[in-house]
Image (tube, rainbow, N blue to C red; front, side):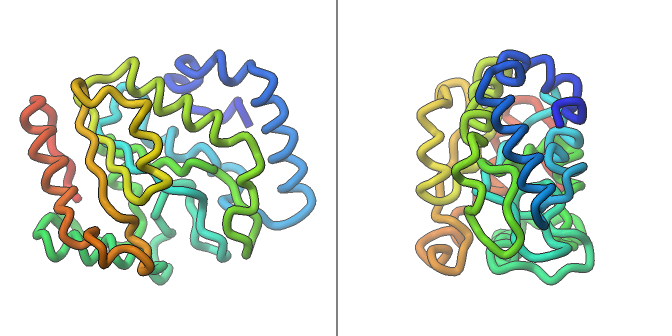
Length: 220
């Protein structure tokens, strides 16, 4: 599993990858995938890092765990494979992009194009058992993904952190808000999106900040 991690991330996270908890995590993941169907496919667990090397990160969008239905999860938070119906949260993300006039590209639900522009689409938990949300929350994934956020905070400046929902917003304490932009909004889930996600304007605010930092804005 470690061998598949993109080189710049592997170097920055070397202490984590050699830590006892990560060895335990690898064993737990290998066992879960051997025993039953899990998502995303094992080869795509670290796909968010593959498409978005550390030095290219401009924006972090933090999800919770992968989609649980067959054919959906592709290793990127909130993203689905092209041609798949949009899950509710992704549908609401699309609606927000439209309502804020932030959408500049065709929106297929596959967010790989965002990742290739520097959007790290990170789930806090990178694996899940088919049909069972939060089923791998007892795996020590959060130790690893918290370390990713700390690495970004330490090694990058001028990064936009989009934290949607109370779970993601708890991670803000790891970010220096004087050196980066932290934007918070309700989660795009239908249970909470009506509380302000649709009007948060995060995609435009993120691009405004990137331009101020002399970075190329994202083509959403």
